[in-house]
Amino acid sequence: MSVDAVSLSVVVPLYNEQDVVSLLHEKIVEAVEPMNRTWELVFINDGSTDDTLERILAVAEGDDRVTVVDLMGNFGQTAALSAGFDCARGDIIVAMDGDLQDDPSYIPKLVEKLEEGYDIVSGWRKKRKESFIIRRIPSMTANWMLKRISGIDIHDFGTTFKAYRASVVKNVKMYGDFHRFIPALAREMRVRVTEVEVAHHRREYGESKYGIGRTFVVFFDLFRLKFILDYLSRPLQVFGAGGMGLAAAGAIMFLYVAFSKFYLGIPIEQKHGPLFITSIMCIVAGINLFTAGFLGEMILRNLYESGNRKSYYIRKIHGASRDENNSKVLL
Image (cartoon, rainbow, N blue to C red; front, top):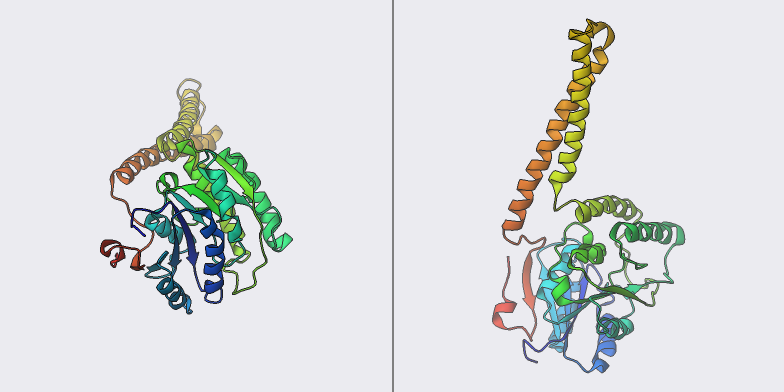
């Protein structure tokens, strides 16, 4: 297979999933091979502490369509997906979890829908096989909020199981736990997004990497996303407007206190002591907010003009189909 002849990349991050590797590979091959296109499977070992790496290397040894991206440690799912997207060579990239709760047989449906003219096709786990109270209720609430924050009408932002045009997903800068927000983060590109209902299975292998604590992380991330989508590119407008408003309110109070003191002869300490202190505090806070907005603008400019800082570090890329330059150790 030629290095440049890949039309579809399937990207799967793995962390301590040794029991599922062989079956996962088998099911992906069964799903993708009949599609009659050149493809690759990119496994990302996200610092697994079990035998996951050894088992995916064994799979790669017998299938030259498999690439193994071995990260130097555990950087989290978002960073692992970023590494996979960066290393993927296909024009279309399908991402999925590695625990077989996502059903690989739906990969052709995601790709087929993408080729109707969409940029992102999200899987919709309409019938999730998880705890209703611990997982499904928080998920439904978060998805409802995400719809309104992003303006993108899909039901399931949280699933990893999505198909992307490479030209879109490779230009989305992710950090933290923002992989679930890719459709929203890509909004500024005016992407066309839709969804396809997919099957969702109970976890039969290994243990879930997420507990109830993840719910609080997701809801905190929603506020971060709102700021990123609406205000990140113009922090001075946010902090500057707030700062000017506070400073203006403080100035009005201060002028009133000064008028009362110098024209009406009302002693400040007897009648307007708290108001005077409040006016000073508002003016100082307003100046600080305006300064924060100005500094934000400078930091943002530096961020855009600086180099591409990665959220992960690669120990080595393994794969028979990779040329020497793509297989070397990357730090």
